[in-house]
Amino acid sequence: MENLQNRKKEIIQQIGEDRLKKLKFSKLLKLIIFEIEELMVYWTVRQVNKMVCEVFDINISEPLFYRFCLKNLKKDEISKPIKRDKIEEGVSQNRDTKKEEIATLNEEELSAIAMFNSKID
Image (cartoon, rainbow, N blue to C red):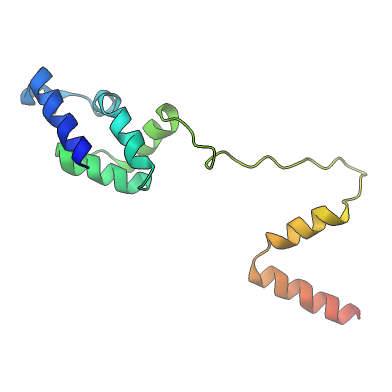
């Protein structure tokens, strides 16, 4: 947050406080993109949005901020979606795939499977 405050001072020195208030939100966000990226390492998108709004005394809506982050920020390895192998029709699943599926089930699904298996035995 300290970096955001320092960046605000730099921007005010460069363009003035009046022009800062007249800037469109998207242009302001582009000016502070590196500070946002830095904050995103430790904070959620919602928290970073709140910090930016507080420091710059503006009200950027969450959907606008989310869209900006989605389009402009570098993606972390962690946030990349996991690629799943597609199973072709007519090919049965092997045992390892079924174990992976069971590992991702929630408690209700697991208890339903357990009850179903106990009825079969």
